[in-house]
Length: 128
Image (cartoon, rainbow, N blue to C red; front, side):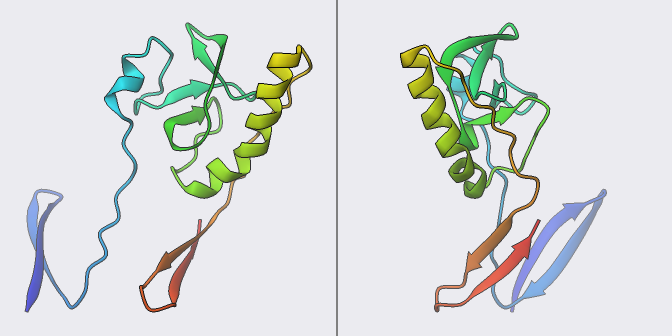
C-alpha cells in the first residue's frame, strides 16, 4: 500500500492512495530578481498593461509575458493559457515600439480551463 505522509496544521497526516499526481505552483527563477527590473512579492517580473517591464515603477523597453511575469493589478495563476492569450498583444507592442506607434493594452482573462492529461488519451478538466 502506498501512503503519502505530510505535515498539515502542525500534525502529521497519512493518506493511502493508488496513484498520485503531484501538482505544484511555478516558482520564479532567481535571475529575475537580480535583473534590476521590478518583481512582485513572488519574484516574477512586474509589467504594465502594455507588457512592458517596470524599473522603479517606470516602463522600460523590455517586455515580458507568461510565466515569468505578472501584469500589475491583474495577478493570475501561472498557466500556459495566460501566456498564449498575451502573445498577440506582446507581438503588437514589440512592433509598435520599433515603429514608434501606439501600444495596445492587455488585460489577462480571469478564468481558465485546465486539462490534465492522464496518459491514455483522456484527461481531467478543471475550470478556474
